[in-house]
Structures are given as C-alpha cells and as structure tokens.
Length: 243
Image 1 (cartoon, one colour):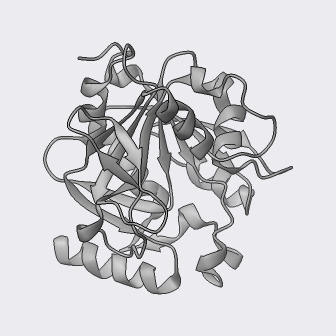
Image 2: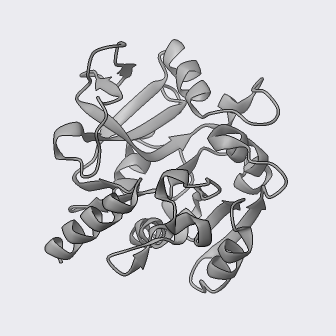
C-alpha cells in the first residue's frame, strides 16, 4: 500500500555537501558528487534513479566547492532542481535535510546519498519503496543491500531485517547481513525536536527504531561505494563490465 503523493509528485533531496576527504587529492579540485566514475558524475547516477521513477522535483545541497555544484545542476534541464546553500557551515546529513525542509514540503520525501552508486535490476527501487510505504506503520524506510555483493565496501553491515520488514541495528562487535544503501524515505515529523545545526540522520533512525517505525526493503541490483581513489577505479571497472 501507499499513502504518499503520486510518484511524479514526490520530492527528493540529494546529499551533496560533503568534503570527500578520503577521495583526496581528487576532491581538492572537484566536489565529490561531480567525481566521474565510468565517465559519469556520481550525482548523475542519482539523477538516473529519479528519471527511471518519473520524479522531477529535486533539492541538492552544497558546501565544498559549492560554485561547481551550482553550475553543474544549473545545466540539467529535465529536472526541477533547487539548491540548499550550506556554504556558511556544514550541517552533516540530518542538519542538511532539516535546513532544506521548506523546499521538501509536508509529505514524506526521498533522500539519496551522492557518494554511492545504486544500479537497479528490474523495476525501479524508488517505485518499490513508494508502493511499500505505509504511514500508519513507518516513519523511515531504508533501502538495504546484501553486504556480500556490495562493491568497495569493507564494513560489517548495518541492519538486520525482520520478517515484518522492521529493522534492528547490528550489535557492536558483530556483523549484520545488510548495509544501508543511502536511499530512503523519511517522514518530516522525525525532524521535530531535533537540534539546530549539524547532526546525523542516524538520530532519526534511532528515533524511528525506538518507536518500532524503522523499516527496510532489499535492493535488487548492484551497489557500489566510492570512498577512495582506488574505489573510483574499482567501481568504474565494475560498471564497464555490466554495460
């Protein structure tokens, strides 16, 4: 079921303000969302997900090398892109989304990370998430991917997925079978009583989890993390092999 706006009317925020310190020296001159992998900027992989789902209304935040971000998204003509300016202070993931709430509206919205590549197999993941959403049960819906098939990922996973779709975090020192892809739907009510300034979206996940309202959906396709110069090469080789 879904009680969201129709998919073409959904709004999306793409997190694009990070410093990309682990990608230096590339990010000394190029903001991370504009780093090219297999000939395509990272943020363009996000735009492709939106196009496949028929979504056009996008908010992009900017901080590091902000002028390049503005110039790049300003040249995109098939999407309606608003820019949330964080050049004065970096607000982290949660603070960045909170600052952009006036641009995102009162309904639940998508948030995408621009430092990973999500390639769907079959139907659009955004469509599947939209159709699964249920505001009576959910405040956050995270797209998950199996750790064992992730490219460029060396972590221990993030979540366990229950048979009812609810998520639990992995316990410290142990692993979990699924990682968070960076694609999510969030209910803006989660931002009530959050701090001003910088904070992580993990604060919202913990809030939803404590109320039994944090859910997940498994991704079908490929997921690639692009955190270092070597990972750029690895991801590029993987994508070229898929083409």
